[in-house]
Image (cartoon, rainbow, N blue to C red; front, side, top):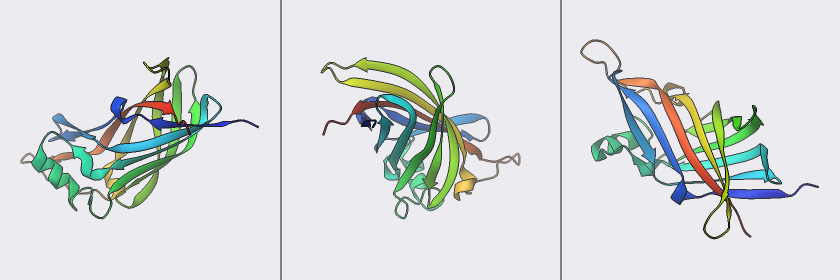
Length: 179
C-alpha cells in the first residue's frame, strides 16, 4: 500500500495572476491575494496527484481600486454571491521531464467547466528549517464568456474593450503537511 502525502500551498511563496487584453492593444494584469489549496500524492511522486485550490474573489487586486470594485460586482465575478473560484484536478500527467498536463474542473461564478493547464515542475529544495518544498508554474487560458462573464464595451473603432481569453499564471510552492 502506498502512503498518501498531503502538500499545502505556501501563501508566502506563491502567487496567482491573470492577464487580459484591454482595448485589444495592451494587457492588464491582476492577482488574487488570498488563496489556499493542497496537492495529494501517492508517496513523493506528483504523477496522478490530486490538486485542489480555492481563490478568494474579494482579494482581487489589479492595482486600481475602482477597477477592483467593478470586477467584484455582478458585471464580472459577483463576489457576494460567488465568493470563491475553485479548481479540482481530474488528472495530472507527466509529459516528459518537468512538464505536466493537468486537467480538471474550474468553478467560476457558479459555472463549472473542464479546463486543461500546463504545469512546469521547478524542483525540490529544503528551506531554512529543513522542510522539503516543491515549486510549480501553472499556466493556461480560460474564456471568460464560458463562465458567464460577458460584460464588455465596444471601442470607438468598433473593437472589444476587453478580450475574452484570460491568461492564468500560478507560481506555487508547496510544503508537506505535518499532522
